[in-house]
Length: 364
Image (cartoon, rainbow, N blue to C red; front, top):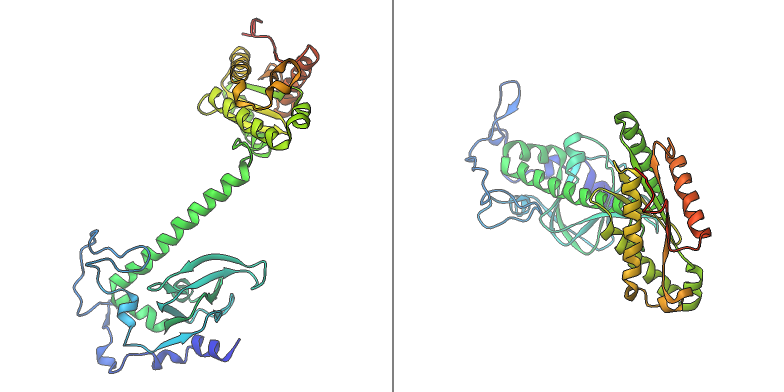
């Protein structure tokens, strides 16, 4: 740790950081078991006009924020870009009130593997959780650009929070803003983890996990599950004749038609390569065959969506499919997929561009 970091985080600054003229008689009174009783400030109603902005920057009509409260009362410091304010694991013995510039919160080592969790703007309070919990830092803080900041020792920060509810609200709304952002990031990462990047359908890893859950649910409720697998006919020929970019565009168009065909709540996924798979909870075999045949029909009726369709055998891009149903065709997810895949293989053997069982079959 550098000398300036020791100065920033040293608890010995507690007395030095007190505003001029501060004395024991000016401190908040403690009564009722040590609870701090605010003095000299009227509590403002919690309304949109007086509620602190989530970003920590005051809106018109808000009471003074952290920057306005500490500016001029506590010494400010200017630090150059790149300064490490503190590191993960350092004691949480002070907070940083950012008056100017930006800092970033970094997880991990400060190398190419570092992850920037968020960037904090002027008006923000940084390090508040470690101070309130009397805990170690959970991340590193680094100046993105030259900054001006006030470093409040933890006892001073906690005292201000206890005495001024509007400052506590600012901390709360700043944390709320962070939690909302974190929630968005988690949802985004989750979506990326379960989605096929090219087609926008679910990936097969998610499909397989979901199938296992739905089979357990169907078994306990004596429900049925329909499953259909599709394969684009002669897709290698399509790629060879038109190029892989055209092949990717065909996969995207095929996925869009599959989405349009499915019901709300159906689990539709890319099985791999040019194969697609669908899970229809509560569907009978007849329902599943009707769904599969409708998808095949839509592919045939929308040849303009496939720029290289004319290069295919027969001058058309087609699909084949196989359908199966739980529990009659398989009592596990793997068995269900195996049954549908066997029917897909048979559809290919019979000449392609068809669904098995055939739609006219008595599948009820």
